[in-house]
Image (tube, rainbow, N blue to C red; front, side, top):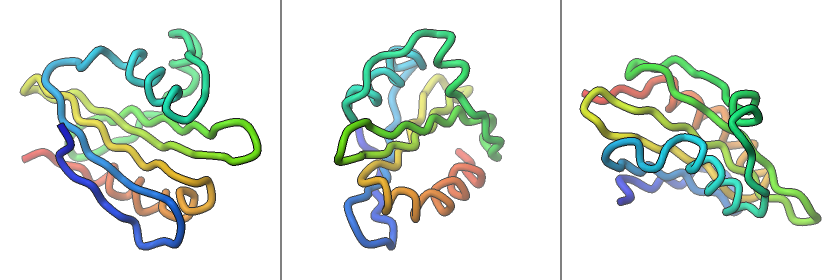
Length: 119
């Protein structure tokens, strides 16, 4: 399922991944709630999903981007984007790890999302 794994050039626990799945892969809300669960956050509903969604233009189309930080003493942060393509696939791009290294890697990750093209 994993298409690529990228290691940002920053110190600490952080990893970027690319996953491609056929169809809607369960839909946006279920994927966002799965990601939230991966960092210890509870699920959200459609209204909170809309409020959390940021749309980023890319050469491949609009990418829905979500940014979540866990609660508690040890914080994990996840910045994740998804795009559904005309060929029926859904691409997931995710940057996750400790808060500080994710923050340092986020500008480059967002540039990658903005430059995304699928040709």
